Image (cartoon, rainbow, N blue to C red):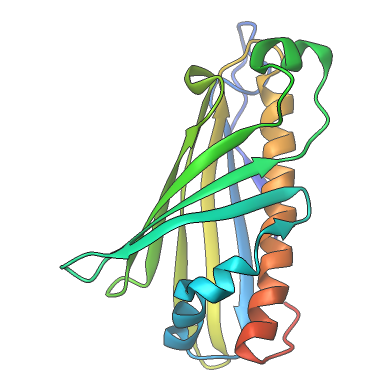
Length: 187
């Protein structure tokens, strides 16, 4: 399932759907053990294959294993989207770009991430998790996130563009991950 879950809209004020932001959930299945999926996701060579995912360009900046076993990764992301004139006036001519700061916990089989926008830092908040869980058929990856754009009237529209771009990128990434770990599952 790759449908965004929208938070309830506020019934008053000038905020069009962005008062609460947009929650999203994306699920993918892999015919492999969770440890194998995790190993692939942590592989820096695999990360290099993810430079272009639809409208999302990614660049792995660094990945370090901490003394406690956690992995800290920083990735620069740029989302190529067409924005309206009002949105461009607020954030400028460049495409939305951010640094994704992620922490992997092997014990919990969980990535936790936040984003640090490069432009209009005060206008955008986003965070989420990527959970791996095992089952009889392999691994289920569940991505849950929240995007909030603090722009009156247009925030909800921009949130939708961002979430659509993320869903498209994660769906493409799932196909590449299946190929990397050697299974053709398409769910």
